Image 1 (cartoon, one colour):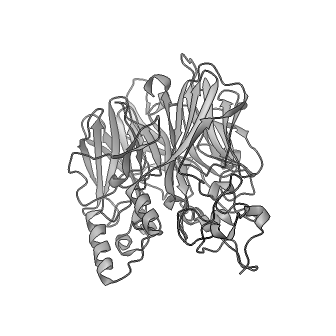
Image 2 (cartoon, rainbow, N blue to C red):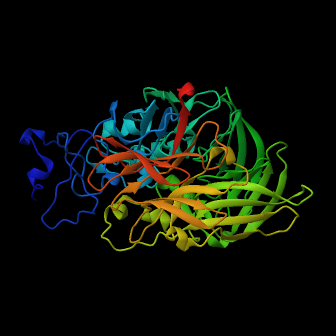
Image 3 (cartoon, rainbow, N blue to C red):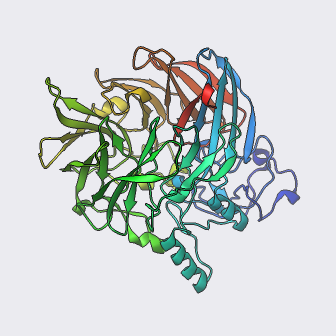
Length: 539
C-alpha cells in the first residue's frame, strides 16, 4: 500500500494516522480503483484538507468540522430588502470513522445557514445531532436502518434485537437529512421519511433542540412519513404510508400543536404495499395522494431494499378534499416515478365549475434507475461520459367528472432543459394555484447529475439558465421582493459546490435570471437537498 502524495493532503506527522475517530482520508493502492468502497484511516485535517480531498468532487465530500460560523465575503450587490435567513438541509457527512456510507440519502444531515442583514452576509453550518449520527459516531459504523443499507448484527442476539427494533421503529433512522421547514408557530424542524426523523432545531444557533414528538397515535407500528410536508400558516399537511394495512393516512397538524389528526384514510389500489411518497402536491381545495409502482418492500426489515419497482401493480392518483376529507376521485395514470412534485392547481370552466386538476412533477420516464444513480460510488466516478438521468416536467391531468383514467404528458419539450430536471421550487405564493415559473436544476450534457440552474416559463415554453463549468448547484430557492406585483419579482438563492473544492452562494435576479451577487464560503460545501426562508422578523 502507498499513501497518497503528502503534498496533496499535508500529513503533519505519523501521529496523525489513526484507525479511530470520526474524520478520515482514504489511502490508495497504486492500482486501487478510487471509486471502490473502502475502509479509511483518520488524518488530522489542516485548513486546506478535507475527506477525500483531491479525489472526488467536493459535493460528495464530508464537511471538515461539525460547526462553523463567520462573516462571508460578498462579490456583487445584495438587495437592501433581502433580510432574513436561508436554511438548507442535506447530507453533510458521508463517512463515520472508517466506514463510508453507500448512498447520497444515507449521508448524515447538516444544516447550512446564510443570514442576510442590510447587505452583509453571515454563514455557518451545524451537524444535526440525531441519534443515528451520535450512535454511529460512538461505534464507527451505522447502527440504524438508513435509506439504502442496514447495520450488520455481530451475533444472533443482536440480530434478534435489530429485527424487534425494526418492528417497533427503534432501529429506524432519525437522520433528518431531507428538508427543513418553518411551522406556522415559528418552530423549525428537520424531517426525513421516518416519523422519528422529525427533529427541532434552533435556527439562530443551528443547535439541535431534540426530537419533535407527536402527541397522537397515528404512526402506530408504521414509522414512515412523506419527506416533504406541506406547511401553511395555520397547518401542516402530510401523508403517512401504512405498511401494515396497505394504504395512506392523510393527516394535518395545526400550528402550535404536536397532534396530527386524520383527514382521510386512502387504501392502496395496486399491490400489497403502498408506493413511495417522498413528496406530494396540494391545490387550494384538494390533497393529491400519489400511488407509485415504486413500492415499499417488507424485505427492508431484514436488511434488503426499502423499495422495489413493481410496474405490474400500476399507478394511481387519489384526490382528497382538504375541507371534508371526502375521496373526490381516484384514477389510474400511466406508470411514473418521481421524487419531487412541483405544484398542482384546479382548472375551471367559464361558469366556475372545477373540471380537472393539473399536477406537475419531476418525472423520470418511469425509470427507477435514478435511485441507483444517486449511490455515492456512481456520483464520485464521473469520467466525463454522459450518464442517463433523463427526466421531464411530467404533467398529470386528473379529471373530476368520474372518468377512470388520467393522463401524463410533458409540460414542455424535455430538450429545453437538457432532458434532466429536478429540485424545483416556485414562488410560494402560488402553491396550489395556477402558476407560470419554475426554478430548478437541469442538466447540461455530459453529466451524471443536474449541474445547471434554470428558470422555466411554462407559458412561453422557454428557459433561462445559469451555469459554471464543473460546479454543482443545489435547489434554487425563490424569495419574493416585499410588495412584489409579479410572480417572478424577487431573487433566487442556491448553494453551489465548485470544482476547486470550494463553495459559494449565488444570488440571481429571478426576473432576468442573471447573477447579482456571489457569496463565498471559506470551505467546500457538500451537495444539499432542500431549504426554507425565514424572514428577519421570524428569526
